[in-house]
Image (cartoon, rainbow, N blue to C red; front, side):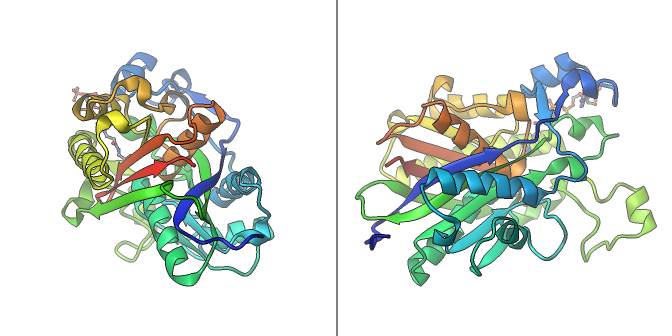
Length: 333
Ligand code: UT7
């Protein structure tokens, strides 16, 4: 492999995996008191993918990661770092990235997880490029993967209609090309709002007991309308800030790949940023909210559909539990 100068860090490969099983809104209306009309009009979601019981987060992550490595034209041995962003690790430890390493037969390279909820994938890219800058790693595998069905409360209609399973991955690589790749990433968090979106049980605060399980404390709890208000405000701010830091305006953005939580959040973002919805990549109608996986799945789909061309400015923006948020501007090479 040629020696790279490392001026830029580019996305050199993309991949994704979504499980084949489809759960439609009508299917859900047989489980909880809801309707296809309510879910579509309030969220934009029509269906989501659900992993079989024996399919883990790392199984999906490994599939997406393998595809991204192939798409980059690399071998697994070329990769020097694996980071998986997830809130649904296979188990509390070992970390999910170690399972991915084993499943793909990768080298004895650093492998760890990042948990920043729906913002996790952009956080992970930021951490990966930071490590690459200091330790000489040329190629990192960054994956967002979730089996949200495993922490969904299927008796709570206010949350169970929202989430789905899947994984998306990128390889990020040092490149000697000028003025392309990751131009800027911004991340932030507000720990004063931890309680509006959480899984309160199963950690050190409330270790698993019969009572925590009976009270569904191992499942997602969300105050949806509170989260909604923060999401719109924070995503707009973070997106504006990262554009400004990159010396770009909304007119310079070729495609926005937002976290796929709710069509109404995306519409508000489009309006406030003054970027037409036609420049947004939206696929939540088919996958629902897949948390850390949502941006890389959407990016992979946009790439494979020919929506991303050399020189394009891509804006990514995410928001999630924590509260956390993150945004990125990437110029495609
Ligand atoms: O990925 C991390 C970030 N997450 C998000 O960004 C999610 C943000 N939040 C949302 O997307 C929205 O708040 C929801 C889609 C979760 C909810 O939409 P909403 O317009 O905020 O509805 P709401 O929670 O204010 O509830 C309105 C009504 C309530 O009934 P009442 O009290 O008005 O009689 C709910 O009980 O809708 C009812 N409702 C439902 N009805 C039918 C809530 N869920 C359902 C449902 N089917 N599935």
